[in-house]
Amino acid sequence: MAQDHGKARITASVYTSHVPAIGVAIDQHKTTEPYWQPLFKGYEYSKQWMKENKPDVIFLVYNDHATAFSLDLIPTFAIGTAAEFTPADEGYGARPVPKVIGHPELASHIAHSVIQDEFDLTIVNKMDVDHGLTVPLSLMCGEVEEWPCPVIPFAVNVVQYPVPSGHRCFMLGQAIRRAIESFDKPLNVQIWGTGGMSHQLQGARAGLINREWDNQFLDQLIENPEELSKVPHINYVREAGSEGIELVMWLIARGAMSDVSGGEKPHLAHRFYHVPASNTAVGHLILENK
Ligand code: DHB
Ligand code: FE
Image 1 (tube, helix red, strand yellow):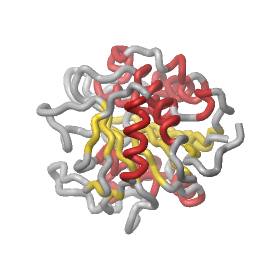
Image 2 (cartoon, protein in one colour):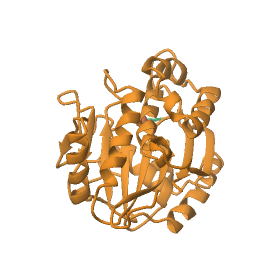
Image 3 (cartoon, protein in one colour):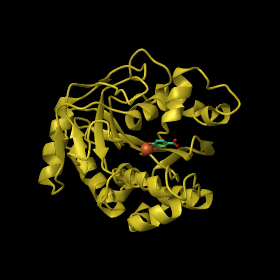
Image 4 (cartoon, helix red, strand yellow):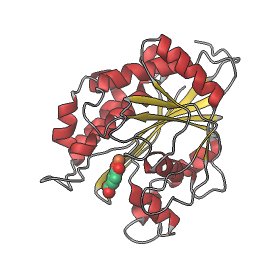
C-alpha cells in the first residue's frame, strides 16, 4: 500500500534487554573489559544503524521497576505524555545520561486513538525513567550529550501480578500502529520492545537461563508473532524465569509492524544473543518495515 507521506509511519522495531549492569559498564567505561566486550560487540552494528536510520521519535515500550510507580499504584499500560522525563536515581545515584525529551503532541494523539480503540491507557504527565528505558537507549545510541530524538515512554506492568497477556500486548501493538499512522505529520517513528530475555533474580531458581527457549522466542517473534502471542504468561515464568515475563513487551513492538496488518514481512537487519550479562540472557533484534 502506498504510504501517505503526510502521516507518521513506523519505520522499524528494535528489541533489546535492559540489564542495569550494562548501564553501569557503559557509565564506568568498562565496555572493552573481557566480561563485557562480547556483549557490546553485538551492539556495534546497532549503533551504526541508529546513526544511519535516525528516527524522528522513538516509542519505547519498557517496564518500570518500582521507580516511578510502587505498590500504591500499578498501571498495566502507562503512556508518558510529558515534555521531558528525568533519569531516575535507583539507589546508586542517577545514571549520568541525558534527560529524555518527550513528544507530548504525538503521545496525546496516541493516547486518544488507542483509548478510543478500546485499550484503556493510564496517562502520565510526570514520571522518572529507570534502567528499563535508559539502558536500551545507551545500548543503541552509545554515550551521547543528548539522545538523538524525542522518546515516548510506554510503561507496562510486568513486575506485580496480574501482568498483561502476550496476546493483549500484541493487539495493543496493532492499535499503536493505527494511532501512529493516523498522526498528521510525516514523522518516522521507531517502536522498541525492551526487557527479557530469560532471567530470574530471586528464589530457588535465581540465575535461570534458557537459551533454547530464548532462541525459539526470537525465531517465532520474527516469523510467526501471532502464534507466539498465544503463549500464556505461565509458560514465560516456567521456561524463562520470573523476570522472563518482561518479554511480553516485545510483542507490543512486533504487533505494530506492517506485516501483522497485511503488509510485507519485515527485513531482519540484525540478530544477536549473548549469555550472560549480570543474571540475564541478552537478546537483540532489529526489524525494518519495507
Ligand atoms: C537484572 C535484570 C533486569 O531485567 C533487571 O530489571 C534488574 C537486574 C540483572 O540481570 O541483574
Ligand atoms: Fe528488568
